[in-house]
Image (tube, rainbow, N blue to C red; front, side):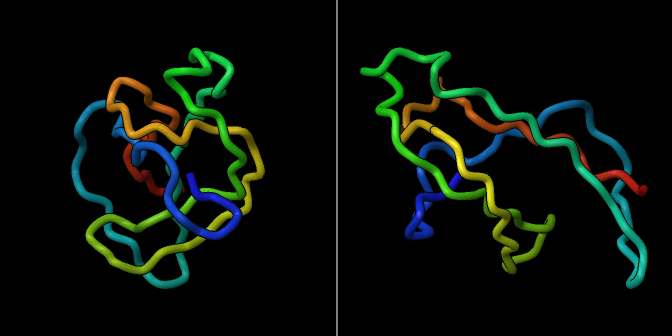
Length: 94
């Protein structure tokens, strides 16, 4: 998740689900991936260090380009690896 200024806040998303065969993305086609977000209220204030988030930065597998998606929400500023706010499943064809 990112702050209103675009700085990463908290841990990066963790992968969820089982391994599968790679999906080839062909120009003009679509793929999708389910992203699950955990609310910051599920953690103690001390552990979470609550803050405002403005969006989610999405990176395609094995790529450096980023797509920033608006997602205004509360999140955790902490880098504690035991606090996982986002989980992403593997990319699948639509």
